[in-house]
Image 1: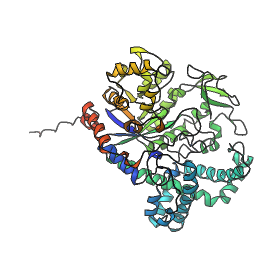
Image 2: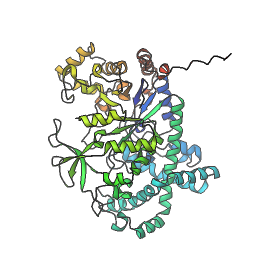
Image 3: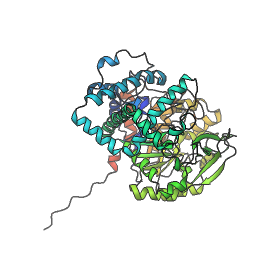
Image 4: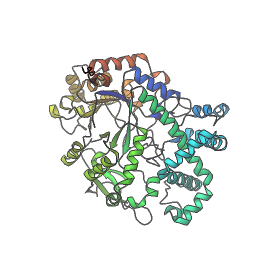
Length: 527
């Protein structure tokens, strides 16, 4: 992928401010894009956009293709006539600086369903035609997703009434529909017809709103970087509708699961629990499901960051039922064949490879073969527990960057830079101060300057760092449950001081992509 020197901001839409408990794709999202343009940023990076379930993680979605209905702007639905302004009057008192998932779901989902039903009854002919065209265009995933969600809602209600937690399609649904027996599928499609069309309508709303927002961003010269996890959630329409593409037993339960092995950071490794692909079955279909997944993701965004890229070369396979990741093994994956198939189907792949952690030479060779830029995180350059190497040879130090690289001050899994620095040992802080020739009193902006001045083609700044926030603004702490994915910025955060300071650095370090475009000389008239 060709990279033009640029910079941007990492912010997930759930972190946008607003009165309805969670960020939405309405006016505030457009104001954020205006802010990016004022700050002369040309990239906006987000996390996966799919509907989230237990734990609220965007990396554990009910579908790799669907959008999260909770992001739908209620105000937009009022303007469309699908809701009345009075529907929004009795909302709970939501936190202004955190996502309130529980109350937002309880209050907002019934309103979304009401809007969908109003649309289905009263939509004008042109909107109805657009909806029908949308359903036809996305039928390859939408039909399964809508049925999955309708059935899931039914059995989830039963589980809640029975005080059962962790209920999923492969451990709580009736066997007939869990295993998609033909008669059961037809019966559920008939019985849940109303619920199914509501779920399709909510996806129509989401796609319309996101498409309009993306078009606005692109018009402002801002490209959107999305995120696609290598693995999918076990409780998802992806697995339920495509059991033959995963290593499952006859009951739909994983035989082996994903994770990473024990290392310096964790003596027991990390047990993620995602079902693993049956790569042989995928290859026999010329990776059609993955082609459609990437194609669908590129409908939402302009560039994709692939999480856990090294898993396409080899993945850590853990027997199902293990309590830790210790008893796993490395298994080769057909990464080169896979990316060749993607390239043949979709053309040049605008992909960023998340190549953090312990990366082997074959992974590096695969990334370089397809021209995917890798990642560098500045916090790892000075953190003795993260760096993997120390001193001047540390690959995360800017003087060692390859130009074909994306640099971050930190990612969604890191502490904010200010919070990170406060927790460093004195020797680590001393290294930071000596490297930067700064006293550390403005550490977040020191790191922003270091990122933007580096040779890396892309520089991405978590918005929390631009706002100089501490650890209370951290987005996610890996391997913990609760308190993650909730941070939101305050409405007055889009101030001229932050925008001007970012814009000044764009000017100073040549990160306006327009200046690197060389105009072709005008042809002289032939005599």
